[in-house]
Each structure stands twice: as C-alpha cells, then as structure tokens.
Amino acid sequence: MSFVLSLLILVPLVGAPVSYLAIRVNKRFGILLTLAIAAAAFAIASYSYWFLYANLPPPGQYALSEKYIWINLSFISLDYLLGLDGLSAPLLVVSTLLALLAIIGSRAQIARHEGEYYALILLFEGSVVGVFTCLNLIFSYSCWERGWISMFFVMWWW
Image (tube, rainbow, N blue to C red):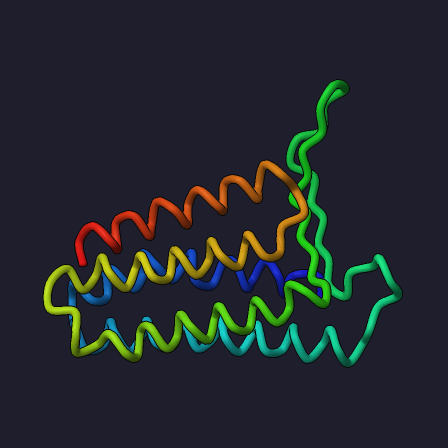
C-alpha cells in the first residue's frame, strides 16, 4: 500500500510526455490515451479516498504514507515523504476529477498545439497531487513551481 501515493504522482507525470508523443503520431489515439491516463489517476485517487475512510487512522496519523531517504549525510538529510490525511484525500479526488473533465471538455476547443496542451494538463495534475500529498518542504516547493510553470504555458498559448 505504500506505493499508492507515488503512483498517483507518477502516472500523470510519466503520462505527460507519452501523451505528447502519442498525439504527435495520431491525434485521436493520443487524446484517448490522455483520457485513460487521467482516468487512471482519478481511479487511484478514488481508491485512496476510500482506503482512508475505510481505515481511519488515529488523530495525527496518516492513513497512507511513504518515506524514502534521498540524501543522508552527517549534516543534512532529505527524505521523499508523502502522506494522505482527511484534508488532502477529498482534494485529490476533486483535482483528478477536474483534470479528467478538463480533458473531456477541451477536446473540441483545442485546435492547435494539442500535444502540448494535454501534456501540460497532465503535468499540472501530477504537480497538484504532489502538492496535496507531500510532507517535505523542498518537494512541496518543487511541485508547486512545476504547477505554476505548466499553467503559465497553458494560459500563454490558449
């Protein structure tokens, strides 16, 4: 169970360049692949929401948590730390649902740079999920900035 949150972040982040390349080769297949990636992220978020409320943790604990050591020196330690609590679980479900609806609703509206648009939407989705689940300041900041940068390009081009 400890890999669910990482999977929730990695599915859209890894799916973004795959979606971009697939749309460049075949537009219809690429958009359907993007929808499948967003639907998979929504399904994982819905499962994590269900798991949280089926296994309520004690106050101050996380239902799902992950910790991996990145840097462990004598003077500094940097961990990859994710957690899911009662506040972040509904936000995950809503944000993944909104990304899915944005992809569905924009199919007829986006006429140029389709690959870039759908890749940036998936990149933004992965960044938002990272912001809602991370418990480390450095990782939180990197997810926050990645979300800002992806939305900058979405607003600039469209």
